[in-house]
Length: 319
Image (tube, rainbow, N blue to C red; front, top):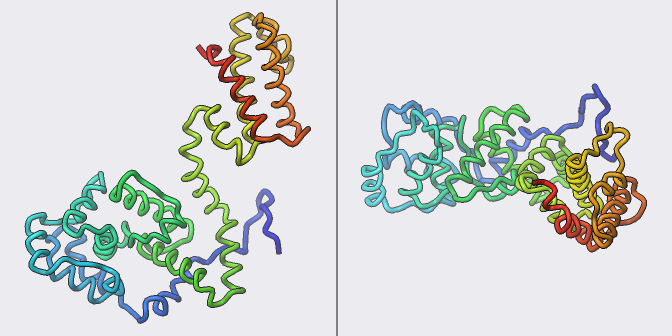
């Protein structure tokens, strides 16, 4: 059945049960692991009563499945590094990148550092996973910043899907990815994938990360950036910006009618523009109207020409 939007006051019943994917974990990692036991062992580390030691690292990677994928320095080197860095995990610094950077000094691997953080403080941290990073679509300028943003995003997903911790949320998302990748139960997994891809929450978070940086740009830069992807939306954005600029310029010439009475032609006449400029701006207005009213199929070339006219002739109107 095709997914549809919700009517006002309607509640979506058919939603993704992210927690259910945790059941796949033992099969995916090749055995049952008592992760809670590992977490409990590190309560003293969690509250800052002692520093991280070599035996802690050995225990984490021998008792969890993550030892299969981690590359650790020899114990003699690790002992020296940990004595030098003296890692203490509480209180957490306001800038959480600091604790990640200190772990990276020792282990040189964001995966290894994240596994340690995940067991020391599962409420706040999860294992760094490229597939989960791709699902979340979080990025940062460096490893530490990316990982902190990754955990911050996981906290939002934890709340949305009513998970126990950041660590549990990351594990469920990893299991979801692996289950989809392996397609062991195609019918159920296709439904789960559809629910994931059409989730209002997932769509909002993906829009935040993918469109957020674009929306910080100037409106004409944004319009140009998407002109090939969606010429009509690009023209709508450019048209709105042109209208804003025209209103501003005409207002300086004392053309200030009521909003419902405002028209582009009289506004342009107040500016005493050269004939060639007026021809270009008439084309801008016509393309704006085609975008607003769906009068014609717009193409990227026409819209990019429209944006060029606005930049060339109207840039000074904002001063």
